[in-house]
Image (cartoon, rainbow, N blue to C red):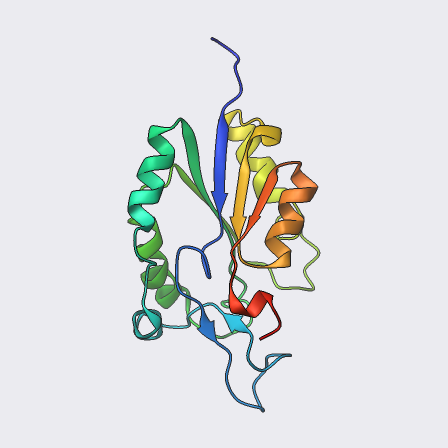
Length: 169
């Protein structure tokens, strides 16, 4: 049927597709010891486990069921000076090797005021416009309140990964 809206499953990268890296040290730039972050090198990504098991199979299964699969990720660490663009691209290659229909990335820092950085819905709204997605029948799978906030702001359903760091542990 022409003009029919499509359904999508949006997925966050770090903590959903990639295993997260635990923030370490008391003198780090991070606000909270014990929370998680994105990997800063391929070595670090592989050390924590890399791509979660079955990610490719899950993405293929979603596509077989008629969902678009779209990666939506905040990646401010180049802006913050934690890694180079080249190293980020080497890390990101592990995600783009998976069968996503599209990838949306926000490189802005927390103080840049952009509309794309989650929990703002900009990346989801851009994807919806590009792909003709019905956000009300779509899902966002994430591992943080930033992800659930973006889902809520865009009007799609949110699925929060049951990770220990979401329990204050």
